[in-house]
Image (cartoon, rainbow, N blue to C red; front, side):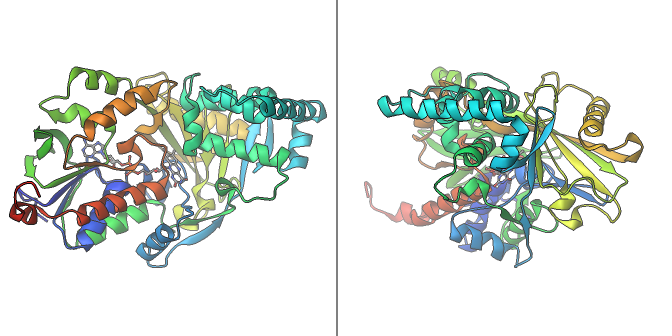
Length: 465
Ligand SMILES: Cc1cc2nc3c(=O)[nH]c(=O)nc-3n(C[C@H](O)[C@H](O)[C@H](O)COP(=O)(O)OP(=O)(O)OC[C@H]3O[C@@H](n4cnc5c(N)ncnc54)[C@H](O)[C@@H]3O)c2cc1C
């Protein structure tokens, strides 16, 4: 479908947030144009195809507490989804622990003296907390006041430094449901669960599309394209504005450059990138604040194996520093359609920063490093490897460094001045959102736009109305 010079709503970024917004707007009969820089839609929630193998950028399970969002996804998938039981392990101190941890497993794995130290430290913190409100500034403060010092040292310190790459993570990440926290809750549950309450992050079943998580985005794209264009391989490069009103977006691909005017602009691309695209440029203090906001990046190394199956797990977490890998999964345990019969693959996640030692390793070096670690961990053999694929994923996690909120709120305050700019999604809003929230922010913004008078109606209104 052709892109026109003028459309009603311009959506930048074809991840779940941008696609959900475009889907809801298209359904309501509005003219939308979607620009996605990558060759496929889906963003962080896409599924890569490598021959007959498929894999997500780190296994993506869909769970939500919101019935409306669950219905939305199930309807979109036309009832074609699997309900997958979760079975995960953590590898610590050269041992495998169940995840969620079970008290007996934790006790035998860690040994009685360490377990007693964990319980005693935890109790001490609980008693201290009766007499003072803990002042939590960093992740360390929060974990120590919730779990005790021993648990912080054994588990959280190494894992959080591995995931985030820095020591001083703001305690605010805790409230945004990071995977590290869900492990933390698991540990707390194993040792101290007396209430019998169900913890959302520990639910033992999840929804998964048979052909990988990217099926959700592919379905959204197919529905949008019944009415409106979705341009892949086309990056937004400039956003023109005047008097805090966005007038047009400039996007480009190898063949051509587009300038598209619109009434409303929706962005799900990295917040930092969005601000830098504004023309005329944002004031210096805003550009300075935005330069302080960072994302953590990810390298995914997938190794295809001439073997029916390696594990029976959905995830395996690897917190320790002497193992460079952060987490692995075997897609066949999520859906049998992810690998051909008789073969399987392991997807390894390396948390890193763009341009650091891990990111800059060559693909061959990354594959050989992965195979070596998998030989030790899962007893795979090098001669079973029949292929490999390396994907570098920039901007996988917003990085919540202690003090980031000062800069973040300054940027948000500035962006709120724009009357027709909407930011959505995990990457766009710099929030630790999972897929359900990314979808919801897209639908919510579509509802806001649909509730606004349209341009023609606005022009017909008397001045000042
Ligand atoms: C390793 C990992 C595992 C995860 N596991 C889970 C899980 O199990 N369950 C769960 O619910 N969530 C999970 N998530 C979170 C989930 O991936 C996100 O919540 C969701 O994909 C965010 O969607 P989004 O549209 O907000 O952002 P994104 O997916 O980042 O979409 C932004 C889009 O903008 C595009 N873009 C960027 N710049 C430009 C430009 N200049 N012009 C045009 N397009 C541009 C990008 O290519 C991308 O497609 C995981 C995330 C990671 C990193």
